[in-house]
Image (tube, rainbow, N blue to C red; front, side):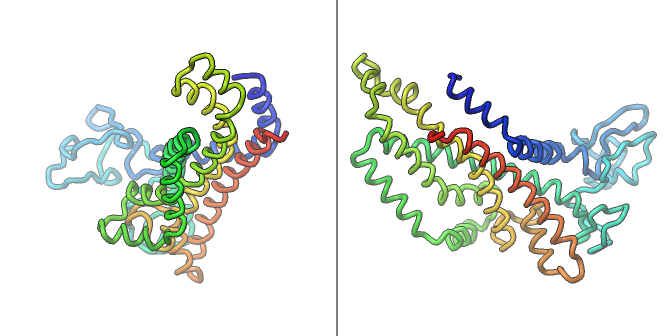
Length: 327
């Protein structure tokens, strides 16, 4: 890390909004990624016939607990010596008879139209959204950086073909293609939805990097490296890419938030993840349908989605201010 990069990171961490955004994001990230510890119908630990078991993190066959007439274990009805459940003892897929029950001591944020605990689905849905957003960022940047580097450094026919592909992607109707692909493949799984959305989103990163590479490849330090006998790979990965990625870094938080928002929109419209996957967009859709009778179904996912997007955008704005080359 050179002196300029250290100075930029110091500027980033001196901003209050950076700390607010990081703190809010890390809280969401921690609780959602450890969701089994906070919301689970399986006990965190139980003592059965003198032995300790940990069903929340380890799967045990029913025969372990003397059950031979069922493929699942009802741990709440199982007679144990001791059992420790999560603070919210409900699973996001567990359907109860209490349909659209208002918030109470038993269900902190009420239940949805199928009797599922909203708190559980909110925590697990947040994990799905964050995972989707981070994977969306990783794939978009991997593809966009690769194509942008090839375009900017090699140019010629490859650059022309890539530009035409990007133009084609920009004119295709995004939502219609998602619906068409899901219909043809008869699947709306996490990975298929992710791949289709990434297909329409990498071109911006590629264009940004292409512009950076076109500017850097004729700079004096690249010419000096060529004169010294450096190969193409050394010039790209040692001299061009590190300098080209600095402005692209500021797009990272906005790309993550874009992925999260896109998934929420698709789930809200019914073209996202397949049910019964926990989803903030699916909760929003239920909230819109039952807004007069169950307002909590709309309020809580709205708050959670706003929390995620605002915290990530605060980080992004702080990064942009710190890494702005004009400052």
